[in-house]
Length: 278
Ligand SMILES: NC(=O)c1ccc[n+]([C@@H]2O[C@H](COP(=O)([O-])OP(=O)(O)OC[C@H]3O[C@@H](n4cnc5c(N)ncnc54)[C@H](OP(=O)(O)O)[C@@H]3O)[C@@H](O)[C@H]2O)c1
Image 1 (cartoon, protein in one colour):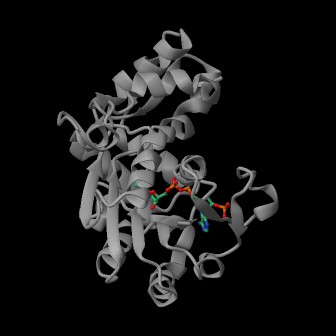
Image 2 (tube, helix red, strand yellow):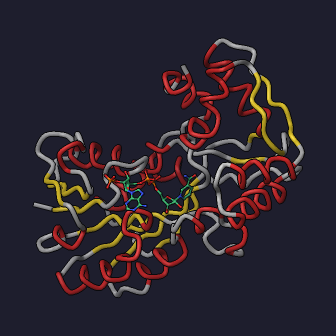
Image 3 (cartoon, protein in one colour):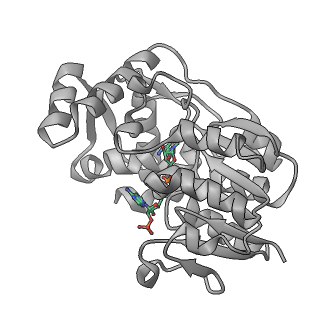
């Protein structure tokens, strides 16, 4: 029997991944800091740390946010424990200037997780997704609950959001088959959309006339700082967005190729996740 250890198991990618792997009939070990409230599917074994769950695992899904400063030690311990395969959750922009990677400021290590997996001597796959669709619920749901206007910077900034469950479906494929071994795979949604188009799309799913109102970048940057974000985060986030204005985001066909079905559109994701905005 194949045993897979999933770090970040209660998160955006980890939770659907755990379900997909359990449904596929493999032994799943889920890592969470809060086993009692994790609410994972029956039959899934729960561990408080990745190190606890490594002995006897055949493959490991690495989430650098969840592993934090234990990332390198976990990769080394995986090798020592006889793990055969590492699947890293990286990011499409992992090789870009760090000053344009806002999530590094909160500790994500998408370049390092990719390099550690690829340099581990084990079988490896590095998944490099674009922005997750769920980000837009986090960013905009409270404004949408309060009215039909979403305010933010750069109405024409472009992204190709990927449904979180498409990432986990590709991760399951990377863990369960040999098809993707040794590859760095850029994963995106099927379409580049501007901020204004994303808001309209959510509005269509909700049956409401939502509109995006562009705010001056300096004002948005200052608001981030005022509510407690580090200046480095505000600068990286604003810089990243500014670079995508008037330049359609990269769209790749890898999700469709790997899953042998179209990647989930943002419209379909929004329709399936209306509850997040109500
Ligand atoms: N969001 C995006 O648009 C995007 C795009 C590309 C790449 N990525 C990358 O994807 C990774 C994040 O994946 P995700 O969204 O699935 O993760 P997530 O949902 O934010 O977190 C996964 C789990 O890790 C634990 N966790 C979260 N923050 C933690 C912290 N500070 N310290 C220790 N444990 C923590 C939590 O589990 P417990 O509370 O159960 O322990 C959480 O459920 C990051 O490396 C990010 O840069 C994100």
